[in-house]
Length: 395
Ligand SMILES: Nc1ncnc2c1ncn2[C@@H]1O[C@H](COP(=O)(O)OP(=O)(O)O)[C@@H](O)[C@H]1O
Ligand SMILES: [Mg+2]
Image (cartoon, rainbow, N blue to C red; front, top):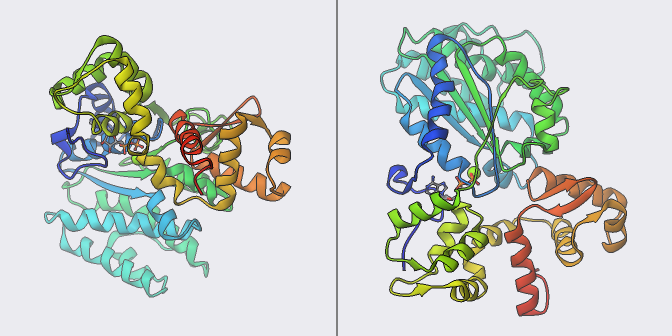
């Protein structure tokens, strides 16, 4: 059995396939930092399509004079059991910057120390950035509000880092992954506007917001729509699934031992829709020495459904009872309008509305013309499959 990675592999380059054009485009935007032009970028695409892997590869390829910090909001969300705040996100950004800075031994140690001190202070709940701010030249406002001080320091820090690096650093790239979960804040709009207000004055800091959400979702509107914080000025970048040809050459390159007939491959592509997460997990259930025709692919798909949809089984385990109830309902009765969901679920008005929002923010359901639907056919297929096999939907 072939072994294609199921997560982002440690050896980034070994399994990474193609994406040449995407990388080239992204590198062009980031390289503008060398000319004191900071682009702001929004990367969208289906869950499992390869956004995180692409950005990890990008980070690896960038020259030493660009500092890259990576923040995963979904990790934070998990650790905090779904309760995230602006303050936690700021701390996470600072921690990520600190980690990257630690790895760059060539930077002035004074700067590195100042950040470590600042982080200690925050962990002790002492929001005093005068010393760290002094070293970098960040004026900390004379206010009693801790969040205001913290956000000011965190937002000013990357640009000051470049300015005080004596030419060692031309830019900072901050990657904010699964950013759609920022929608879970009390006031996400204010948060985006706050970030925007800083970034528009900074010439050497690029933010990449990325998430498993569609190009037209509410959260994308909120950050980059006409009335959004960036008002359309962000570069929007969608990561596409592998094409039919790309999938074919990817498999030929990485797992030449797997053989398909034309019909068989066609069915394989139909099942995975070119999404690398599914291509890999499906492929890992296939055997060398077999020839997969349409029927065999179909059969394997149903037999190995749990392995192929492993990504969703993991996510399912993190959902609340309410979220599961809504999804099961959508699997059972298909796409529905709000009033239909009200009738078909046992949820109160407030609960239904709250958890529909949560599921939207997680990029699990989508809304088209007021119809709510499960956003990923693979999740739909898995739920139906479990019900057929077990006689009930997964608890
Ligand atoms: N360019 C690629 N080459 C090879 N495998 C990939 C590629 N992109 C994604 N994958 C596979 O798909 C999985 C999902 O990718 P990931 O970047 O986590 O998706 P996303 O962040 O869009 O949800 C990865 O763990 C990896 O195994
Ligand atoms: Mg990802």
